[in-house]
Length: 149
Image (cartoon, rainbow, N blue to C red; front, side):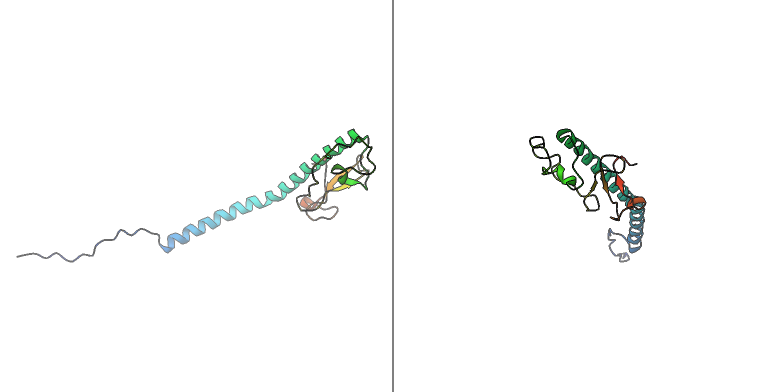
């Protein structure tokens, strides 16, 4: 006589994740993203201030080269544009062909750099009004001048 074995269902090799496992992974990714954002976002403001200082230093060097060629700094009315194109008051034959910078950059907040001649502590000042675009301020909103720490 034949013995019957109980009928078994074939075991499926199911690969996949349960809903709980997926939710745990999503929560972990969210926590990691939060930690990264908390640490990275404040660095953006510092980076913008650093870029402004570098731009101001570059424009100040170009202004010194202008003075060496033309024997004086541009006037307050000529401003930084004198570094790009020859002003009417420049001595003929002394202005460098092509100018001293290819184009004037904007500050990291999208506004033009400011120029004052004479400056507060020297023959000229090149500065940015900071994140708020208004004179004065503190932190990221503070005005940024050449040589300022």
